[in-house]
Image (cartoon, rainbow, N blue to C red):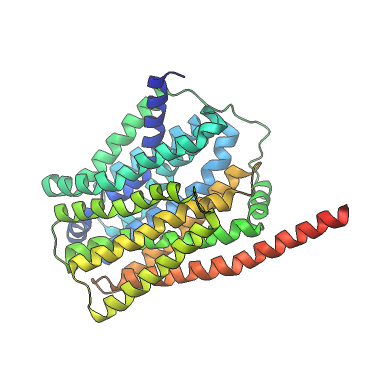
Length: 408
């Protein structure tokens, strides 16, 4: 493969991976404008974000079997086509309930892009290069929270919040054209793959029964919920409570994303000296400690704008280190069903994230307190899940060792 071809494939797959984050981050600066235009509250607009996360969780489970059965490109065409059509609906929405429903459907469409990108990496590149390719995709993915909110803030200020959905639709059209004309099918359809409910459900249940999977998938999902709480509540906190403009909010959001992106890259250095189990545990303890301080400070009014930014930055650093290790440990036991495990883990993360964003919308409080409550509560649950689950992993290892000895 030539370097030019290699770069092009990384760019296309990275763009596919970034479609869903762009769809989330670009419209955040328009929350206040959407609330005014649709005669509702920011808390109600938050629910359109929750519905998007729920759609992503559903799509994770939907597209994996479809892409194994029909190949990668046909389900991807369907998903992107659905995304484009629904984006027009979002542009035309005249009520918040309509927008909430349309965002759910739009998420199901966008989810095809992310699932296809992960599958195509395994199809196209040699196994020994997969980790490198995934790292490059993370860099492209990490750029989206730095670029999208800033672009969204300027679009909203200049052309209104509806313009964001026109731009998202245009991006999806360009991606679709690039895939149709330049990206080959990477996986031939498997006509023996069953799409009947019971075989699919049994495979998912088999994955769920593994102690290492459910320990780190649950812990990682609740730890990751802090990021979702931040994304959902940040427009209210910064634009309504601290009264920054949409443009300034976009820059704050971009700056805070450095905490998540930078710490995830720092993780590569830590892994040279420590095991993933150690790094995940310490990062989660750090995240709990910072979240509790953030909660206590929010209750007592300790933090102004600068202090709030610092506390969120510290929480996101914990998420950035914990998440890749928890994800890797969740998938480690699987070779044959790695795709199923990955889709299930993604659905769990997004499902818990959707609950976190919905919980934020239930608070009638525009301060940072709702965000701090969700962060502290979810990370505490993550820590409990980690330490309880690790005991089950240890028991399983002892039982397996005893079985091997008895066999000899």
